[in-house]
Image (cartoon, rainbow, N blue to C red; front, side, top):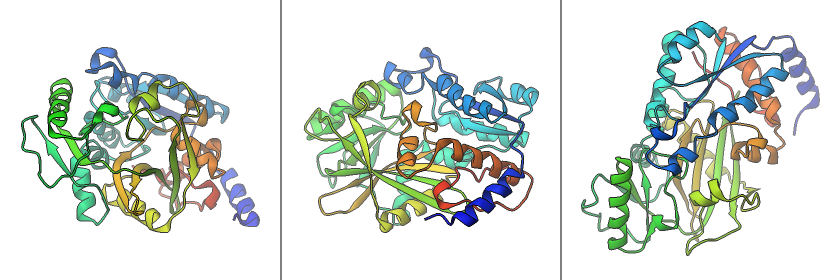
Length: 362
């Protein structure tokens, strides 16, 4: 519950500080020929459109905003634009998610404060196998797994079917279809051959956890605040119930995937630890499966997950709204905290109900 007296005092303090006069939103420079498949392209094709929507929020605050694609011209354009801070929404460079970690490097060299994870955090995010290794070493539960570099690699005999195969360096549920789950080795090897030859990257194989799924978001402000929501799949297309690429990106029914609040202190502590050990910053997202015995298994990790208001059908915005958090208020506190951090001042306290997305670094 908010202490209204404290909230009014904090609000008055915030009002005594100016928003940045100029912000740059960096977004993915998307061209169809950058991506090996149309599915991969679909996950990023609206990057400029979504950046425009966030720009509208900033414009209403009286903030000049430049939209800048994350491409070869970025250093020159940033130097010319001279933003006071950057909102980094770049998910890929030339179609490669792994190259997105180069964006914080540019910003560090130019000494521009920016949102989200740094070079290490983004690099870890784009290697699911390494992320799972780090989770395993730090006691964060994850399904048994192995990495396949060739479709003829020996399959670990201790892995139990059904097994799900995922692209190791690609997010956005690309190729997470009903065909992603294998019940025998013959099907798995066919699947590995297709993925490795098409996307030219290793494939992560892990035991498929039958059960419920929770989306866990962490927003970093004065404290690390965790928001949990069970993801409800209202349209089961195959034998196993999970959020396929088709349901997430191609299904036009807004009620296909819904959320409901979920609460568990144990899971929240796991999320805080996971956020720290893979060097995330500001905000992060984890997908967690719950088996029939109530055990948790971290199946995916996203630094700098998709960020935007509810009209972009953004999962973060949807879950935040369930907790009474308005995107406009989050954005305001993001900007103000970033400005104060950039000036080396003490962070302002933020009411729990308006936990910020901030803590931006130089």
